[in-house]
Amino acid sequence: MEIKAKSRMIRISPTKVRIVAEQIKKKNVNEAMGMLMFMPQKASYILKKLLNSAIANAKQKKYIDIDNLYVKNILVDEGPTLKRFLPRAMGRATRIRKRMSHITMILDES
Image 1 (cartoon, one colour):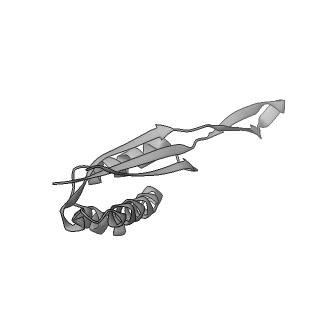
Image 2: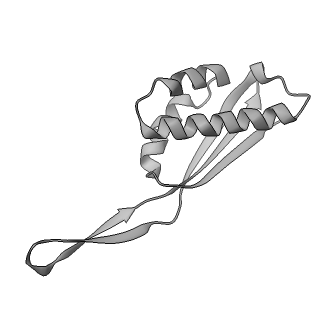
């Protein structure tokens, strides 16, 4: 039985989240939580909160053993982009793209 947790409109680039997400994919929930606690990236904090949410979703279902859960898949999609402009020399301007992420975590029993 799959358990899902979603986090949308997160103000971090999807490429930065995917680097951390690939490291915890296919790992046991306890092992993934231990890895995320000691990673220095901002994305690890976000994924740790999402993993806690998915575990809480699993606790709502009485027939699922939480110790046997593993991270089946993590989908990191691109959300809307905020477009800003920065003034530069000689009257020019450069575009700054502030990217957002939609993250979906899927847990399953082994």
